[in-house]
Image: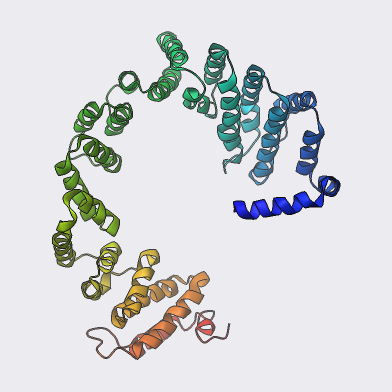
Length: 453
């Protein structure tokens, strides 16, 4: 992409300033956004600052209602407003104050805007945050920046201002952040509203995590939640791990009852990191084996072998193959795993023995299997999968997929010639006749199969 962009830039550069200026002016006539950009380019920094202040004032007092269809274009206007600020203000503290003023428009904006698709909130949470952090990192008066952030947090009715707390460590030293924590704790002590205190606790947690103060994070979570859930234990363990205290992180995870699986994925993700850092290959291997059995894949197999040794590959494959074939249930992931480790015959057997369980609605996992069976000339197994995919499309009357269904039926026609033993399955002509009788009124399907549409 960059190469294409660079080539276009070179060609445009060769056109010369006059040609580009004429093109921009012509574009500005056709587009308000382009016209605004041209004004920004030719304005002085002072003029761009004035432009920003004027637009901000209009935004603060606007009564215009923006519906969801206009929200994208409205978000572009907000982005342009921030570009005016960036082009006009070089003083870091002034920049921080003006971005702060932009955040203070959130109530007016969201009261009058249907932002169900998130375009507008994204400007506050990403564009404005980045600009704020850029100015704040250059600002010498860090305490002033910290105070501005804290003031904004106390009126965060729409949840777009707390991103500034979450990036505090990008622009403030630890000492200033700890001062912010102290002020927030004082607010908690003097605040009786439970909802506001929950918000203040979350802000403290964010700051604690950024300065890697896991003990502060844990104390705050306990004060905020009281009785801790498995999710809270995992959050605390994660911060201890990020802070370099592996043993304490492990101890927090151990507090979760073994039979509680509500946060199993996140818990195991942390345990993998902990066992690796502790060098505990035995526990790491056990956990990786458990994950392999839960969802078999070549990636999980290789992760396990990297710990227990490549020499165990054949043993693991033998065990997993036997367990898959012994399980009467069907999982497309198990069939895919068998094919990926070269067990084509076993995969074919697995599919044919469980043909009645194959659900064609789950096409994303089945279509690759069908293609593999087809490539490996396991025509009966491939046919059984294509039949389930075709039946799913026709049974649902899914007209958008009729062209695919027609392709599947043509494949079934072709493969039928190479199948000499149908076992307990219907031969192709019987299957095809039954399908036709059941779906002959689906008149938009059969012309596609016959190549007439």
